[in-house]
Length: 246
Image (cartoon, rainbow, N blue to C red; front, side, top):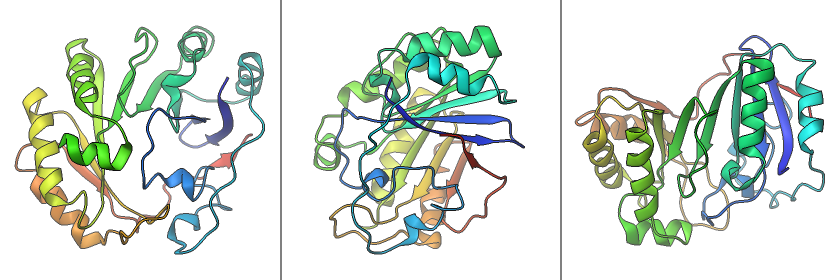
């Protein structure tokens, strides 16, 4: 499998399975700065660092049975598939099924939405919408977003519980773009939850960090169209302990 990192929140009873590899090349991908869970004590300050050498790629990966062997010793009710792009792992559907059948977990998929996988054993999908305008999306990710937007609507039509997220990048993917993204989501269903995250500089880019007030302004813009808008401004404290399992 493509799983290189596992973290666990004992109080929240959740597991995060981190996958390597992606089908987009986002210029501001946080994995260029830190590939391990930023909620860990040893990595929690990494995203705030202005200068840091590019993160090294993982060299060890777990196979299907190793993942299950690790998880059987933990008390959890929720599993989150995240990292770079989990849908690229051909064994993900089989793993989601095993987690449902053996552990009765609630399975959440974080994805860029470019590739759809069998949905039977995925309980919730969170789609990261990088940009609405196709030219901007191509500039940021290297690929068109037409299929992504279509897949977002398709996931909703399947009756899957759905959420959306975007990263606010000042003077690039800014309030004007958030306005367009929010309008698109509202066109599918205005009750779909939408979260706006502050950008933290990663990669060789000219963009600065998004300030809390800028994120708050973007939230106001999105709320013109959507009923459930939240944000991560970058000044939040951890809600519960996260420990490294692998």
